[in-house]
Length: 300
Image (tube, rainbow, N blue to C red; front, side):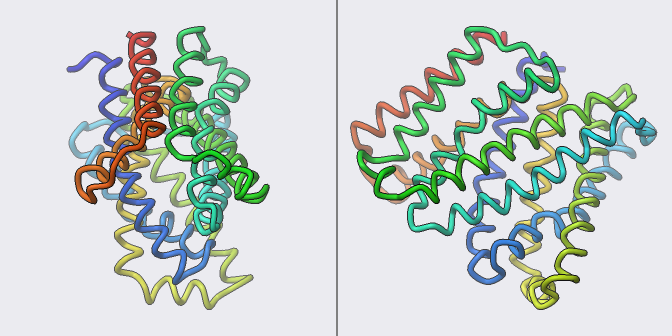
């Protein structure tokens, strides 16, 4: 088996790839279903796939399902509820005219998750790790935002982006806490069990909300089941890899390495759509690469 240091790297990169495609799918659904509707597709249609993942892990490993303790519940609630709010805020930010600015602010998540991880879980924050987080995050912001674009975008995209980043950070810490709180010899079982339970809770909470507040959206989601199914699968797949990574590494390390997602997007823009890379974007790429390299060196 690969050393845990490299396992979390593989899990995180796989999660970032799946999330890149999921975000694109969910963004298209926002126009059809609205922010809450598009948010719900990730949970409602992701839950069946989470059950499939759990059944596969149980069958392949022979490890019984864990029995959660009371200490597990607050972590699960923190992760699931924060992720609902984070996804809704992210989709609201993505629907703004200042789309790029909003996403740049969302990508401040690693800085926030480092603070929350230290406060709630006592995850160590070394000087090299802190430097890696700051350097990689600065690179993402530099790649994403042109001079004067932040001021032109106004306060709303910034507020939505930072708030979404904070909620994603709390969600990451909550899910890591939940995975670590399970008494099971298999971190794969702990991650998969938490995914299934979390998606079940999220699906129930948002379904009840829509039944009470807007049943038409729920009906519209079911009518658009095909693209919603794709979003649900990609969301469940990405989350499966995120939770596996959280089981063997700190949330700050995982979410910082996840910034390679912007490199994937830049590569697609350059090699598929033949878009030229500006000097500012090139410098941003170098900073992201430098930050990730420092992160891997610090985690070795």
